[in-house]
Image (cartoon, rainbow, N blue to C red; front, side, top):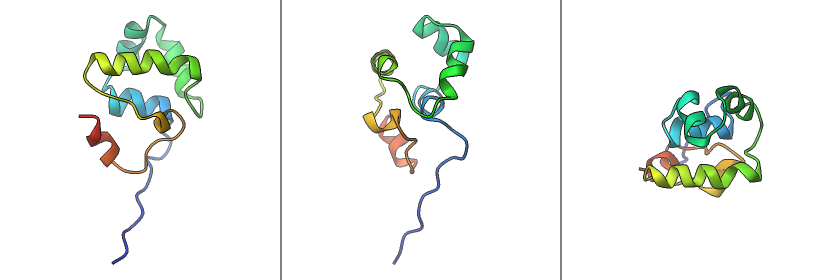
Length: 88
């Protein structure tokens, strides 16, 4: 049979997806971990993708807590929850 297409969570950007779904952190927690301010995190989350210079620090943070971030997630929120399960 045909599978129904997965639906992306509406209104979530890649940076916000990574923070909430992969790292399970608040903006305040993430800002402290990355050494930036909370407004900086909020500003980054409004962008359509994660800039190249911010990717390595996010990968290191994920590794530190036993998670990983797929390269594609910096550009686009995954369509399925299977990707999130893979990070556990």
